[in-house]
Every structure is written in C-alpha cells, then in structure tokens.
Amino acid sequence: MQERAATSTAQMRTRRFAKSSRSRGGGFLIISSAVVLLLIAIASLAIGPTGISLDDVGVLFDGADDPSSQQARLVLFDLRLPRTIVGVFVGASLAVAGAMLQGLFRNPLADPSIIGVSGGAALAAVTTIALSDGPLRFWAATLGVYALPVSAFLGGIVTTGLLILVAGRGGQMMMGTLLLAGIAFAALAMAGTGLVAFVSDDDELRDLTLWQLGSLSGSSWDKVLGIAPFAAVLLFALPTTVRALNGLLLGEAEAFHLGINVERMKLLIVTLAAAAVGSAVAVAGIISFIGIVVPHLVRLLVGPDHRILLPASALIGASLMVLADIVARMIVQPAELPIGIVMAIIGAPVFLHIVLRRGYAA
Image 1 (cartoon, rainbow, N blue to C red):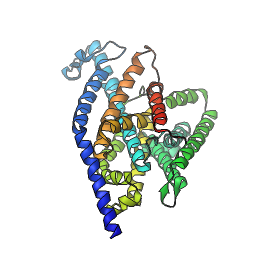
Image 2: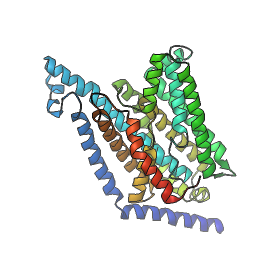
Image 3: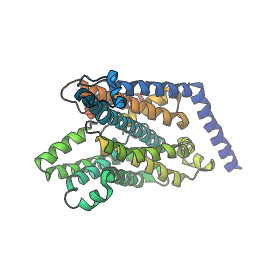
Image 4: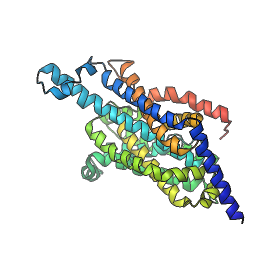
C-alpha cells in the first residue's frame, strides 16, 4: 500500500513538472532559441577581421578561380564555417552536460568545470598533446583525429565516476561532499596539467597555455569530425534520459517507484556527460561556466522539466558560445582574445548570483 501511494505521488509530481513547463512557454523558448542560433551562426560567417562578408558567399558555388574568389572561399569555407560548427557543438555539449549533471546531482552548482570533470578531461587531453610524439605515439597514430576527444572523454568519465564514488553515502548523493571533492579533483587535475607543462618545451608550453584558456581559433574540418560523433551520440541518447532525470529530481526513491532503473540511468547520464565534456574540451580547451549559466537561465524561464530544459539548453548554449567567439575574435583584432576569458567574464557574475541567491555555504 505504501509503495503504491509513493508511486502515485511521484507520478503526480512528474505531471506537475510537465504542466509547469508547458504553461511557462517551453515550446516557444525552443523555437525562438533555434531562430536566434541561426541568426548568430549567420553573423559568425559574416563577421571577421578579413573584410569578407556574406556578400561573398556566392564564391562557394560559382567555381571562380581568381585570387579574390579563392581567398573568400578559403575564409568562408575552411575557416569560418568549421569554426562556427565547432562552436555550436561545444556550446551545446557543455550546456547539456551541465543540465544533466545538475539533474543527476539535484544541485544547480554541479557544473562540469566546478566539480572537476573539465579538469580531468583537460589533463587527459594535455597529456595526449604533450606525449603524442613519445610514449603515446601509437595511441595518437591509431585514433588519428579522435585521439584527443577519446582521451578527454576517458579523463572526464574517470573523474565523474570518482566523484560519484566519493560523494555517495548510503545510496544518497551528498551535495557538500560532491562540491568539495570536485574542488579537490580540479586541483589535482590542475597539478597534473602543470606537471605536463613543466616537462614540455617552449613551443609545446605556449600551445598548451593558449589551449587551456579556451579558443576556437584552431577549428578545422578535422576537429568537426572529431567532435561530431560525440555530439551525435549525445543528441540521439538524450530522449532516453529525460524521464530518468525528471524522476531523479524527485529523489532516487521516487524515481525507483516510477519504474526507473536508477543505477543504470545514472551510469548512462555520467557517460553521456563525460563524452560531451571530453569532446568539447578536446577541441576548444577549458571553457568554464557555460554549464552553469545556460541551464540555470532556462530553468528560471520554463521550469525544471528536462523535456524542455535539455533542448533549450543545447540551443542557447550553442548561441552563447558562437556569440562569445564573435566577440573574442573582434574585440582586440587583429589579435584574438581567448574565448575562455570571455565566458568567464559572463559566467562568473551569474555564478555568484546563484550562490548568493540560494545561500550555499559549501
């Protein structure tokens, strides 16, 4: 009898999530976010320090061989287009990973960078970069363009698994322990990254330093190929996590009464989040706060229903990343500001707002 009552209560609360999201305009948010993303992507193709705009887009199709057409084709097709696509993938992946981890841990502070997942992924990626001509030569040669994403994915999933192991007490996820353990793991990852940088030569050190600040400047079609499979897996697997994430918002016991295999879904969510963060870190470096800022804003607008939260976070995260990239490459031209700095300037005040508003002490 008690079990039936618990199941009924959980189902009622789940329906309340869905009704709240519909009444607060979740569908409109998704449509408008898609339109905004399209406009920002067009702006990303049109804006740049070379003076080539969308008026020159016809050169992609006219087959002209004069020098000006070749230059325009190079800039638009080989530089700006892959950069925009990578920005979309990175922004969407980080935002969705943040939303999934927040739903799993039932805590809006559970950003991949705050709890050390990005640091673990970055350590694995940096190690691969620095040792690809030495001990990891076979790994890099075997996986090719996928060596960095796979390495970062493994680093992210190991870190997340350790977090769950440390923060889990009697089947309950201890939020204070989670955040403190995340800080410790992030510090260890930073120390490991610093050690790798210490043994690197000057050229490798400069590349590693710029990479850690986050940038889309080195985007190419190879990087698009590197991140696209991870983004595709995340996209197709998201629908299978929605019901579990909504159930977990009510608590693990309530999710179990709804018929959710809690442990299996936790493993799936962790794996997907690690894959998303790892692939994003591999192609763009460490970019903080987007996993906090975007899901939090979406949740304020339409509520916690993950049927709306996940796609809206993906679209808004992609838009924010591409917009930040436009600012990064234009604000100090002809130089380029690392996008990680731009995102930190945007995200840090929002993060402080979340902490102060909710009154977290740990």
